[in-house]
Length: 461
Image 1: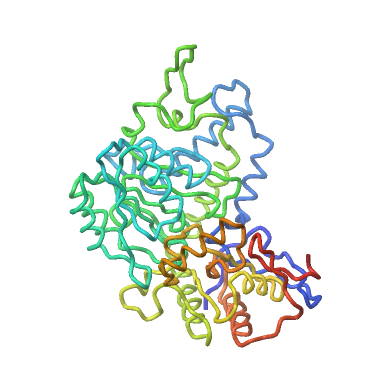
Image 2: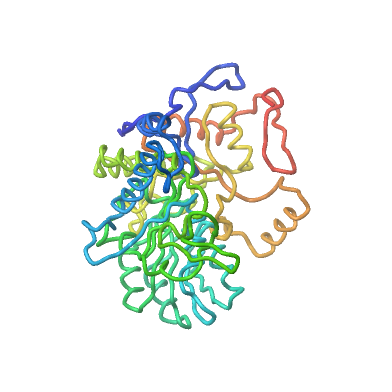
């Protein structure tokens, strides 16, 4: 059995269900955003009296806020083993931004990619690691996509073949763990092969960072660029991080321009300041940085051995439990797959026969006080493949969206565990899914909104 490793703000919140019963809310949507750790909320509360603008402020509060902000930056480098003490010979920086999406957009703008170069990525990526590279096609950069199989996985050999056959491959952009199935690609060999061919690697570790240590020498830690977000790491307020070589940011204009990114401005242009400040135009999110620093400290306190063991136990319980329920289709690798067992996060994405995914999510909420996510999880190409949709079906759904009718848009339901999730929580969730899959009647008719596709009970609207 697995017990929660920490407490989260809101763990004791109760919500009213359709039967009139108040139930403790069970949040199983940490794959999207996590609640705050209690320790994070305490650190933020302690800092708030000292909150001020950072850099160039002469007042005591400004100076203290600056120290807190820059300490958070240093902590992010230590978190991925890129500080001077852990990585001799490396000179990396940590850019603090809004989220993983902005981090990857900054990388796409600043990495020297030119017409005729090729970026290699996969069909399993979150939109944050697809759309910034697709935009580069407007500048003549080619995009090569590595396909997945019916389980939603790709092999190191497939990546290697893409690298070896692409015209002038320059960058591999790949996920550290998919946000849909929770599968973790075999990154050590993938990254080593890319480097042997002179290809830099960016890993989107937004889904991976809260669940596995990222250290040089193995896995994502060997990448040139890493991007992740506090909102998936129990640190609200919206801070993201991009770590990469200082040399990438030494010349040229940043993606965002404005105050804080310059040494001098006149009416003919600007002299940019040094990185990482060059990439952080405008007033930074000091509270978000403090929160993320606190979360990283809490991971260190709990210990990665405990975090990984907790995750492995919950992943096995969640995925095997879903796979064993009649009428439930688990997306991604099935439990017992020797090539993927042990490489899965505690995420279960699934469908119930005969029940639209938005209705299933609505019923889990209204009848059981269980919060999950439904839809395509900002990974549309990946879901199309996992669901086995034909080109004709995909075209029809595209038409429906264009005309504003989302009643039959394909998708699935995702349950994703957190550091606070317990084995008892997973059993509660599996019991609810089993009841619904067995045909439990609706307490009253659910009403669907055609514009969103979502369902709700009129009595709770």
